[in-house]
Every structure is written in structure tokens, then in C-alpha cells.
Amino acid sequence: MTTRRTPRQLERTLTQNLKHIRDHRRTQFGVGPGWFPLLGRLDHKLTQLAGTPEMYTYSQIKQKMGGLRCYTHISPDLPKEVRDQMDDAVTAAEKQSYETCEECSAPGVRRNPRGWVSTLCDECDAAREARRRRGQK
Image (tube, rainbow, N blue to C red):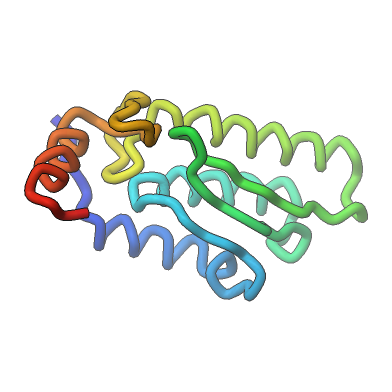
């Protein structure tokens, strides 16, 4: 059985690997901590392909319809083949998010309680439902 990481541990993953995302003034950022490792892997891949994080920026990272959305600007100075590989890496991460719990990184499925689509594992879905019943967020 895998040990579940706490939100604080997941936040450390983001802080260590994606500091330049949060430091960039224009980046809009809004996803659950369960996707931080996924974003870390994506960012590592983009940096490998581009050679440096200065060759791309994120304009927005968000959750939409239960999936990750990463809007990036990739420098036109990079060869088209590299830009295409970077686009493919973003698409792969977005696809993987549909199978990854937004809260804890465990395997998850898309759920649609009361019209808001989220990707959650059974445990996080049950916790969210319990909070809703108690009138909490």
C-alpha cells in the first residue's frame, strides 16, 4: 500500500520544483495539491526539452471539468520540433490528470457531485462529501 502524502508534503513538492511558476507575476494558478507532483514532472520535462525554464512560461494552470489545464507560452526561438514535443508533454499531463486525485495524487476518477466535476479518489471524495454535509467547504 502506498503512503498518502499530506497537503503540506505536496505543497513542498510544488515549492521545490515549480518556484518559477509562482514567482512569475502573470501566472494564474489554481489546482489542488494532488496535481503538484504531476506539474513537477511536466515542468521537468519541459525544461529538459527547452534546455532552460526561461524558454517557456505558464499563463494559467487550472482545473476545468475535472482535468488539468496548462496554458503555456513557448518561445518561438525554439525549433518547431521541440515546441511540438513540449505541447505533447502538456497534453499528456492534462490527460493523466483525469486519473489522478486532485487532493492527494492517488488514482482517481472523474466525479460530478451537484454539477461540479472533480477528479478524486474514493477517500477524498468521501471526505469532501462529509465536509459538505457538515456545512464546510
